[in-house]
Length: 437
Ligand SMILES: Cc1cc2nc3c(=O)[nH]c(=O)nc-3n(C[C@H](O)[C@H](O)[C@H](O)COP(=O)(O)OP(=O)(O)OC[C@H]3O[C@@H](n4cnc5c(N)ncnc54)[C@H](O)[C@@H]3O)c2cc1C
Image (cartoon, rainbow, N blue to C red; front, side, top):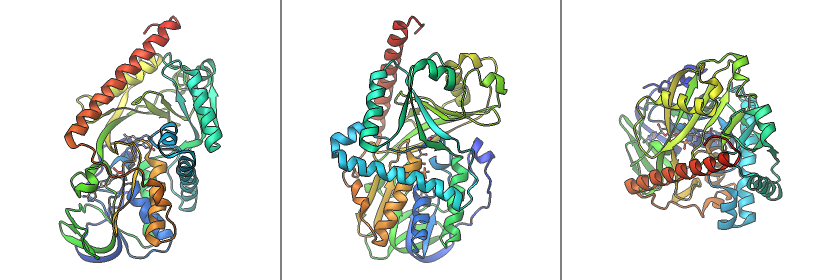
């Protein structure tokens, strides 16, 4: 089994394959899924001295969303702070947010402590507004400062275009210097190595085919083996549909895409992207991208509830990049493009908890999975070890059925609605500024 062809797979620093599970094993904890939810749980357990942790991955470590994504590492969740405050109140939202800032510090610490070569790691994520909404941006900046002590910097439109991103589509923006970027697959591989060094056993090419959770020693069955474990953690993301319906039925798989451009000469790139920080925009399914030191641009965007990869995906993504930066239209070329699948819950919050004694789950990290899968690892490890119950902060975000195929249709319709709304508002704002729609 291999990785899909992606820039990350081409530039991975570690290619040691792990053998599949053969035969029967006993374990204290068996983790299903070798994305960052599973890997972080394994490492957090091992760091707490929990012995006999086994992780089963259907393909390769980081094969799913965790090894294919944009590489933005920021605080917060897919669901916005404003909505969370309405749902669970300020104190609860602050406690949730604090978990993610703690997670970012832990990621930085692990990169150093385990010597994980996942650079470059420049600080900063800029969110550029696709519409003219300076009051809304300032209100969000103030709320984040007052409620969480987060320092977001308002970047006025002229400065944004002069110093950060010279796109005719952008208005003002918000810059978060606490966020950063990494090579996600190399980070996954580094976390896997660190967990193994502490005794975790990882098996690749080992899909879990059935699970019997209704016994003290739960039974996890794979094509050539089985694990009996006191605790099972389901962390199969958007790739584990149908494994155990009460858990996997609570998420919708949502796909998004990334393209790697060929290197662009520095002088031409600097006409467009003027910084090395990661950039996204305010649309619900907007672009997210970052320029690498060799002039390559990793360009991500779009979301769909459809399963298959679109025809001519690389052309589609290159077209998006040229629309945002028309000054690169004659020079930008693609090298590879790929898709990845995330899992989303209807409430757009992670689902982290215990379904029944000893059966745990961590999924639905949406498009903000780098910090939040680290949170999941920590709170699950604390709960399994019996050290803390911060996992209860996620109780309001339960395993409601996501609607199966009807949920996918609803999600796709919502996406088209948001696309149309973003297009209409941007057209209006640019017309007011005397620019073409
Ligand atoms: C293209 C893209 C861009 C993104 N950009 C960002 C970003 O810039 N920043 C950010 O924070 N988040 C981003 N995300 C979201 C983030 O990648 C995810 O939220 C996160 O990686 C989810 O981790 P996970 O471990 O839950 O799932 P995954 O990484 O998908 O891992 C699940 C694993 O479970 C395995 N599996 C499934 N079924 C079984 C089974 N039966 N037996 C054994 N193994 C099984 C799969 O093979 C897979 O490896 C992006 C996602 C995508 C797809």
